Structure formats: structure tokens, C-alpha cells
Image (cartoon, rainbow, N blue to C red):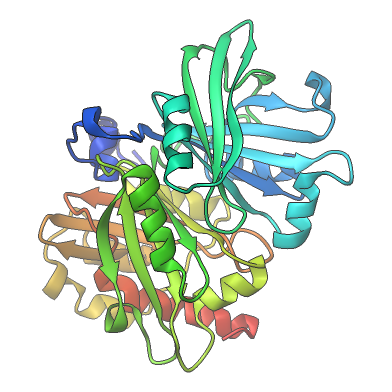
Length: 396
């Protein structure tokens, strides 16, 4: 069957989204701000057509909708790409002088919006207002022949926003104004999996020194998110750099937002580097949930995605503390995939290099087997790998 066996494909197709992203049972009836999940992640980029083609080819995503000058949008071109439940919106400036262009000038390509699916936009935005959030867009309807979408937006760290979306009365391809689009890439190679990933596991934000707890409190107070994990001190430090991190999550853990801030260290940390090159707080990386990380990494490497390298020494003792995983250590070593185990199970993960010229946004592939964690046992190896890249760029 080549690189990807039919047996493995059948097994991964039976894994549901809850298993993929580590979701847990939760009763939403008492939540003042219930969150169903991530509706979409919006990227602002310098060239939307080229970026959409990259995510189609290298990440195996499918373009399903488009809005631009041809459909009556005079300021921006927007491509909607999906892979399973994961949905990216790639937005680029068409006419000079727009807010999209100003953001790209300030930050480079980056994430501007982590849009959330909510059952009642009006109730959510009013609760957010009462609990101190900044409302960027009041609740309003957008409609076309396919129905109506109710939307609003609130501000979070930096210039990032959360658009609140209720699309329960809409049957169109994405939002009113978007038309169905043809895929940008004709077909994946026959030996590649149908999807390289099936959902978004978590989205990581970087904030300024001293403001992590402020934003943790924002998610606790405004959205009712709970604190899932906390990493401080030696948990998340190397010889040269350090950071602190806390994870907030929705009631069912379907939406998880780790928040990082730099810590005092000998040299510039990865968070310091991000804040410098992005020009302030923002989304650092997006973790993509896959049922077969081996197949995904092989396919994405073949299509040109660059992953961080992990030294051989990491794998010499890996089996002693991680134990048995479905992927042999020799295969993990070959593909430079990391593994970690906690009280609930284990996970496999790997990180890309930044996917644009500035050393800002990157991606993670994660395969969960019971573990609800974030790879704490891999932090040192990961940060040392990032530091090697920082040194190559002259930014350590």
C-alpha cells in the first residue's frame, strides 16, 4: 500500500473529533458564555492567492469558498480552506490603503481572528460587555439566499479578535457574499492520506511580559474558561531562555488557548523574538489534530513543509520514559516526531518552522492517545530546537 496503509486509513477514519482534540463531557446549560468550538481562523496576508495555494498544496487543505472583486468585494480577496472541521480564511488586500494592508505592514502575515461558534450571539456579546470586554462589532445579521448568520466581535490580546458566529440558520458555503470555489490544487498524490489533519486542537497566544495573568483572567471572567495547565520556572526553560505559560479552555476542552509571556533569561526567548518581529502580542502557533501523524508528516515533508529538527540524543532514552506508543521509536527518530506521556495517556507531536518570512506564526501537528496535555516532557527539546533556529537567524 506504499507509505500509507489501507488498514491505518480505515482506523484513523473511525476516530471522532472529540478523541482527536482531547474533548471531555460538559453540561453547557449553566454557562453564561457557552462556546461550541472554533468557527474559523482568519489570516491577514500580503498575497491571499499565493497563501491559499500554499495551504492547499503543502497542508492538503481544500478551497471551498471565495469572496473578492469578482463577487463584489472591492477591498479584499478572501479564500476559505478546510480540512475536516478545521477552517482557515485567508484574506489579502486588493486595494491599497485598507485595514488589511495596514495590519500586514505592521505585523507581516499573521492571525487576526479566532472566530468562535456560539449558540446565542446577543447573549454572549452582552455578557462580554458586562464583564469588561471591548466590543468591536455589535450583534448583527448578514444574509443572502442561503439564509442568515448572526455575528458580533470582541477584542482580546493585541489586535487579535474573537468574532462570535451563529450559523445555525445558514446553508451557504461560508458566509453571505462568498461563492463556492473550485479547489486550488487539482489532487493530492495518490499515496497521500485524504486529509493531513482533521481539526484544530489549540491556538497559542504570545503576550507581553507581565500580562499573561491579565489575559487568563479575561478568559475566565468573560468566557467562563477554566485553567487547564500551568507551566512556570524550570518546566519551560533552557540554559539561555525561558517563558511562562498558562492554558485556558472551554468547558468541554474543545477550544484551548495556551497563553505565553517571556521570562527573564540570559538571551532573547522565542516569545521575545515573536513580540519583536510581529510588533506586539498575537497568535504564535496553531496545533492541528491528526489521527496519523506519521502519514501527515511524510506527506507534508514531500510537499515542502519544513519541520524543526530534534537531535538523535532525544530518541536514545525516549522509550524508557514514554513507554510503548503505536509508532516505533525508530520511526519517530526518522521523522523527528516528539512523544510525551502523562497520567491520561500519551501524545505525539511535531512543529513546523515559521511559515512566512518573519519568525512569527508556525504550526504543530498533534496526535492524542488519551493525553490531555501539551507535551510538557518535550518543552526542553522543543525550545532548544527553536533556539537553534533563532541562532541561525541571528536573533538569540
